[in-house]
Length: 458
Image (tube, rainbow, N blue to C red; front, side, top):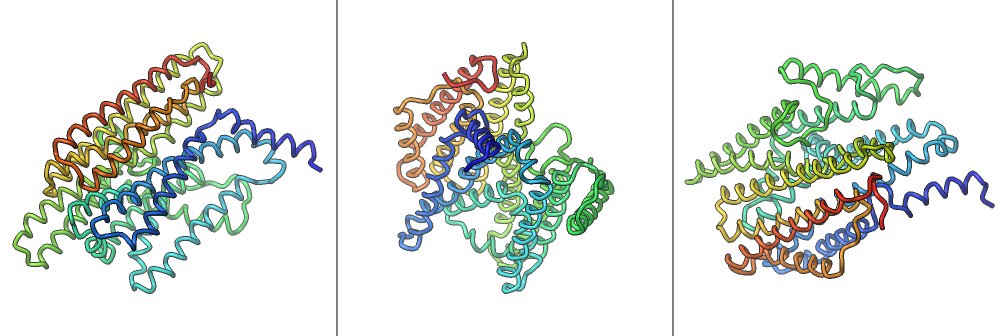
């Protein structure tokens, strides 16, 4: 028989999900499941595909991963909100829950790195290379997937030897050095988030020996990275890397990392072109250098589109706590305008950089327009979180769902290469206009929502 305390805990867990007052929703879970199934189907059927269908395979796999991660972020926020609401109960049921969760997180991260070293690094004979790349990918998955997505989709469309280039980068000492530098910065950010902002990580309470050893190790990494930052003249910053748009204050650290990646990759591309004795070596070097810069900036922009949702959590939490305050409605409007303006700006920069990278690679105008049609589908993603922010927004009609399916088919055919330049120019323009109208309607309804934030559904 269930005790009264257990029943109360179950009710606390059930209420946020039923009322949908937290970040996330059932639509995001359905979208996640659908994209994962599409990616799985693409992997299973990839071996039997005709070579001409390789583009569709790359798109299904490459687009499914980052979009699924975006949807999973909402459910992570949902679970985080539930955990915060259940903190008094979980504190009694599971003592030292926060410390145990932190230890498990660190142990799992270290175990994954060790497994990757044993499975991939030692047999290949490049342990440090794999450690650098694997550590960077584990610490910043969304940025890594954005790069792989861009290289896979557009590179395969243009017939570029992406696999050969990735193998050369994977086995190069320069790339390993750059990866270790980035891992050091990411470890510093990880330490500050997990164990506090203080670089010395002062311990106020007695901790277990294993946790104390981990703390001392991370403290040494943090002090080393901080010393490197101070000696190089950069301003120390504990915010995540590659999550800010170019411009503004406090961006010297990501600019330095972008410069490291640019110099290393451009030098690697130039050296490979020189060894290949290609007649177009100089042209390849210039194109490679420009594309690396564009890819680096795309990493900043696209990663910021995925991670900027997290930066709004604290502001939204303040508004939730003051839902009945006189200025709640004004705060609601300010957050909506700021969110939409920031996301639209980053999407515009991402689309423009994608077009520029394709043209630099020698793509035709037809291919560039097809790429723009694909990039336009980032705009509806801005309307999805607005629906979760403003609960007064009513669900869209089935006509919009049918239109979304048609738009998805158009994107599939765009990367496949079907249709003429005139057709895709019209499709790209219509898609951008429709997506802008969709986001505009969502934003208008959010501004007119009830003063309580987030508002209840009608």
